[in-house]
Length: 116
Image (tube, rainbow, N blue to C red; front, side, top):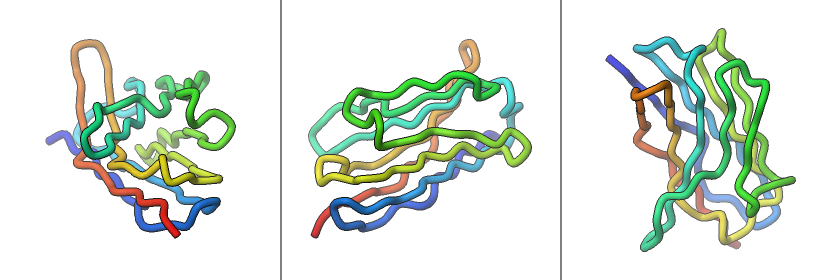
């Protein structure tokens, strides 16, 4: 049974940091490209960051470049999103995605709220 379980969200003040985790099970994690998406109320889901299967290449949305870092630990079957210098506009539900060919899996999401 495929599972992606996100954790680490919460309420943080502007300028603060959070580290999201996404624990995978039920599939061969090491061959999947992993991504983080986010969706704010009334807006479309957007790609935040992505990392290739071996972790050799990453990609970021312009809005988060220099502030967010995506990484993965294939031995732990986990992908991370380190978020620094958070802004109110980063407030959204954050979702983990695993993709390999036609296989496409999503987690349930974790809420990040940036507010003073």
